[in-house]
Amino acid sequence: MPLPPDDPLLPPPAELLVLSAAECRALLAPDALREALAAALRAHSDGETDVPPRIAAWAARGLLAAMPGNVAGVGLAAKLVSVFPENHGGDIPSHQGLVALFDQDDGRPLAVMDGAYLTGIRTAATAALAVDLMARPDATTLAILGAGVQGHGHARTLAGVRPWTDVRVASRTAAHAAALAETSEPARTVVSFEEAVRGADVVALCTDATEPVIDRSWLADGVAVSSVGVGREIDAATITDAARVLVEWRGAAENAPPAGAHELQDLSPDDVVELGEVLAGRGTARTDDAEIVVYKSTGHAVEDVAAARVVYDAALASGTGTRVRL
Figure (cartoon, rainbow, N blue to C red):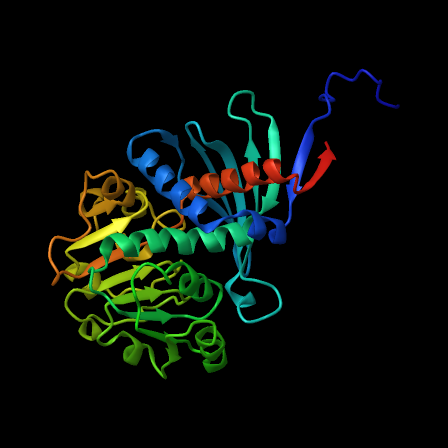
């Protein structure tokens, strides 16, 4: 039996803006993204967001995570992201996803955009914010461990944070390290993670490792360590000896993975400091030049909301994207 034309279950047609990865890349201006991320992190620490812990459904070789979030005055969005580590190094990325942006006043879906590029660049850009807060003013030596998407993203976003004179790149795949080093004038490849880390002022961990890739004994006094891997990149001694552990949200220590961080499960919420608190002047990243300071990222929906809003507003201003009727 055919449905009646006035079927009450059929909603009125809505127009949706669809944006590809290439369009997102063209629209996402670095300065605008950095400002939006900083504002969203401050808003979270000020209690102006609603973000439940990330949930995930596990498949045989990976997971599908859901990350909804609302940032007052910025946007209401949800990201679906799949993480399949075995894809690493092949033709299919390990992280893939979609971000959907909704109207905060009436709930209308406004846009759907590629989530893989947004996730990659907002993760690296947030890490750059953290490094800028943590690193000593005289830092000149940077070690990047991992030469995949995040390694390349960090090389780009960290480029202007300090006047680097030595950028050391190490990867389990030598060809990947060489390819990354070619993208930056001060960059060079080194043969091991230990060689990259020893004597470095800033260490950026960008791997998919499930076991620690650094050792406390390698770290110099005053180093800043940034970790964005979803596995277990930092050894326990480094966390213990850190004067301060910065996070996007205290839930990184309160919640088990995949919402929280593996390395922070033995800490309490009082043992970590939110980036938003430091950005707002209510917390401190570093008090002296000898401290070891750590940033551990889990990824947070306020970052997706902020990035999606920057892309959406730029798309409306430029007429970019494809409009479809739902």
